[in-house]
Length: 434
Image (spheres, rainbow, N blue to C red):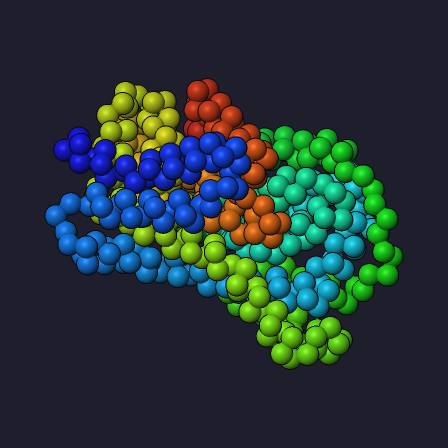
């Protein structure tokens, strides 16, 4: 059984070793494309899956790629490509960047992008939607000012993570609270106690790093009208409109305005949208291969093996909280999806909490925070991949600059070790039940 469990999760380690070692040998992480690493790892996963014909193994793999959450993610990538490419072709991105550089001093640009990402993701509950909206702007700012591109793009990712983790309408928040029987308000209060200090510290760091960005001569003749598509997309997002509808609306508005203002004709707009989809095709392929690989690991009992091994080390309340953190992180590293992770470990976390007297509000927050941390610190993250695409960089280049998840790790450890926050009042969910 032990060997079977280790064999079940071996495709994940095969991917890591293949990607990291081959990149280190070449001395450049760009030399080994992630998509190729996932391809070889998927073939290896098919090979080590026992007692099935090749046809049956492929069915297991493809069933994972047909997951509804994956299809939804692919649709977001497609529409994100059409919107960003259309916005760029009609001058929306360049005019927005010029406007921002004119209004804001250069030293505050990084902090401003982070704060904008925090508010937008909190209002929308969508990290992906935030990255799609702000990613092209951040890339344009980096190009105009000469700022570090991976750093600037990572600022968007960090802001997206903050709001997505805390939002009342985020899918991770909803799934986490439902799995633990916790009220949304209670989870938010515990969550923000841990997350806010990290966000403040990182925002101050961005102000400090902004000193390295020099003021540039920006054309004063930007067209405010061409900023309208971004304004509409952000307003629609804050109003809670479906992210697919928002992105599609943004593409249509860019197309209509671009044709009316003479930036392109109808066929030029279609070409721009097609180009945007092509730019996202690589990342769609990566996500599909990663999801199929994960399906093989789950089918062979790899996730269950990790859960069973981790839960054996729990001895008390603090160790239970620490194990919730570790367990969630490991499963998220295997699944590359924080929502799927919470659904997978939610029942185990609830059992641990009841057995070792962990407050459900804190268990819920630890689980959500841990999954979000890993989601932003793995090179095949569905957040890092599209962000990297806007700047033409590798995700591995962004990892040293995703400061918020690293700060959040410190705050989370502090909260577990010192038993913070002190929770004396009964959870709202219990009060309602009474």
